[in-house]
Image (cartoon, rainbow, N blue to C red; front, top):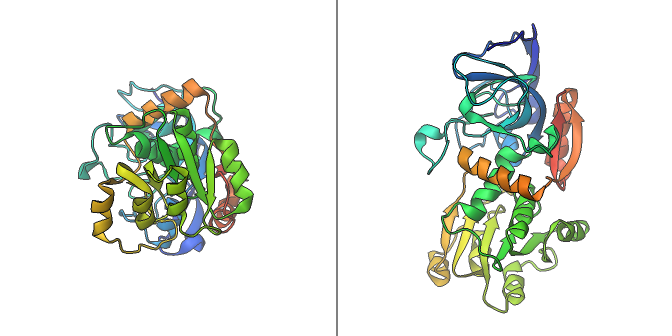
Length: 343
């Protein structure tokens, strides 16, 4: 089933390695969805640290020259190609960052990703494979739903994707106050965990508590924050760490024996070496987390719906000010997601 598409659409494109100055807005004719494809009128897109890496030419996966950036967006289905069965026009949807990763462990065949090797969501009209699409929880706005595909799914995978998951009463530590960390605080709390969060900003401490953190450690005041984590757990250590800061050594020093460290990356860009003896000393599992599958996305959305969870938004920019949105995200240390409203 197809519908009349607009004669022209606007999309941003990336000259990778050019930084924010490498973004350009172009007008082009839309492509009609083919078999198994869907046309989505994008209402909102959400920025994350991944998007800065793409612009800077430092993203770990291939980036197609001139690609439409941004993996995270949400919108309305306006047309479908032949044999599409999972969605229909009028559906409110978002898309998995890895469109081919439907379930199970990550495999090389699943690595093509939106806003990298595949065109992303910073566009008025996205043509997406139907298998990538995930329905939006009814209580969320398009702006809120746009925050989910990368940061939220990463946090969900970090907390539940190892096969053991969280048991009620365990302690989870989230490093920093970026997008993944804020979702970690929210998810861990609603799953019954005690939550410790770290931050470098005094003005964010109460906001983290309001979001669900039971304890907040300011690592400007306590650089060796792992000692505070030990003290807050009577010397035992935390059951899980979601490390978004690249502070793997301190994460291992803070985790309990047979604990779990979900290593998401390093927002600082630093990758300090780790003494392997720390792994033996902690007897911990360290698992690198690369977002998650569509099945994990769907499971996460079920929990979001059941608990009426709402993502944290910091600021919304209009589509025409996408460059300013990137600049704000890169420099302002936002608390919550930065949104680009497209329509």
